[in-house]
Amino acid sequence: MAKARARHILVPEEQQCLELKERIDNGEDFAAIAREHSKCPSGQKGGDLGEFTQGQMVPEFDKVVFNDELNKVHGPVRTQFGYHLLEVLERTD
Image (tube, rainbow, N blue to C red; front, side, top):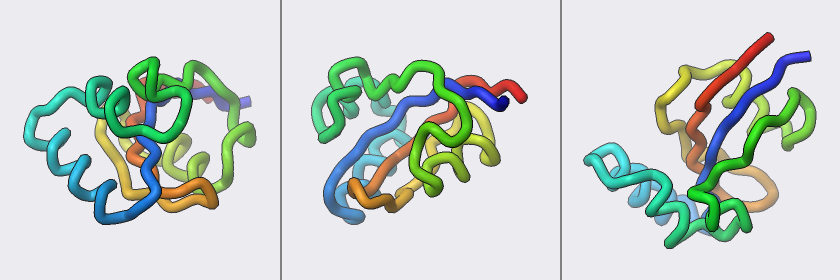
């Protein structure tokens, strides 16, 4: 079973998600932005979701986490919860 460790920022609107991504791309700290803006309880931990297996998260989330480039901020990714910025920190097959 594939496993991964990731962190994310969850916000209600796509425009806010794009603005936060631009700030991170320009050198601002992902964890600090997560603590300030994320609507997920994980925001208090800098967006860290810990380790999880494929299938534990919603499909849109899994698609990015288990397929896209490591240590790069992806998004906005839309789910039923809102818009996410995702950073995949580790992944094992």
